[in-house]
Amino acid sequence: QVQLVESGGGLVQPGGSLRLSCVVSGINFRSYQVGWYRQAPGKERELVAGIRVAGPTNYADSVQGRFTISRDNAKNTVDLQMGNLKPEDTAVYYCNLRPPGSTWNERPGGVNYWGQGTRVTVSS
Image 1 (cartoon, helix red, strand yellow):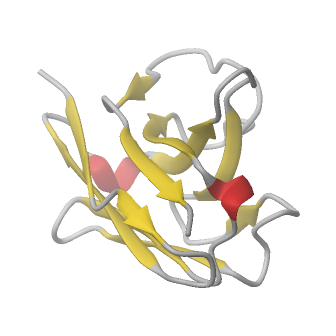
Image 2 (cartoon, helix red, strand yellow; image 1 turned 180 degrees about the vertical axis):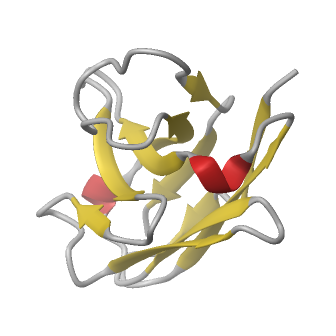
């Protein structure tokens, strides 16, 4: 059984930082690309950051330079370090695992696993 479990969300003031972590089990983690997505109230889910099997990364324009995604294949984890947070970063953040070579913004063929989400609220 494949499981993705996110942690690290919470309430933070504008300009603050948070680190999200996603632990993956039940699958050969190192063989898949993983990403962080978010969904704000009334909006569609969007890619925040993704990291491919060999390490190349993709970021949404809105978080470029503020967020960093990383993976640890020995620990089966993918982290999202978020800095200089803004109120518009408020959303539920989801971890996703999909086949290598997948596009980030289309439903992939094959596996497509999601975590339960962790809420991030940026507010003073």
